[in-house]
Length: 219
Image (cartoon, rainbow, N blue to C red; front, side, top):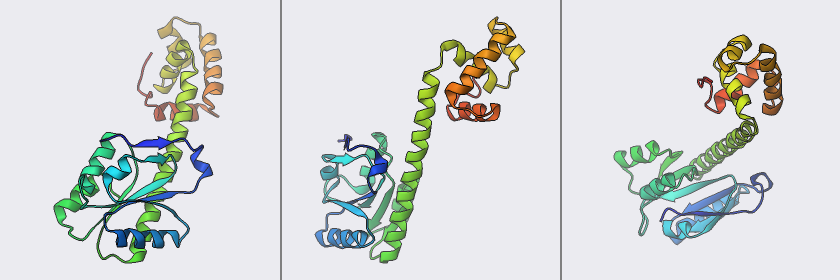
């Protein structure tokens, strides 16, 4: 039930954002589609959560407009299923029967907004644009982190040990003493590390190490 497949249609940057709409009411679906397309957004429509689960979704910047009350899997349970599958799509909930516990659960689950029907068109557009921007920034951050991870994995085991020492605030001579190396050897390795990690300065190198979660690792 948690398996949502994504198609490989090329880099996300080559395609515009998509708004996925899961709503069992045909008239509401059509109305939302017309509204979102009127501002140039691509839209994919589904009548239930299971219908979306069975679809191949393009791996592009996107958001999900999700009705709370659906046949089969409810909107809130679908949010939980997506989280379990580590699918980090921003969600905008809509419902004609909202209550405080429902809203709290949705927002704690990371929802961007919770709109009560009937909502103003501008409210929906504002929420969708905010959600798309959130997803764009997340994808950008993931890409940067992925690049850093690839650079880190290209380091030798010795270079990783030295990077851990540098990011822990140790001086070259301290790292050399801990690893049983000559200080000049540590300096040479550090130069290679800077180049491989794409760091412009020591501060930049430490910042990149922190992004990878290795700032407190000691050799």
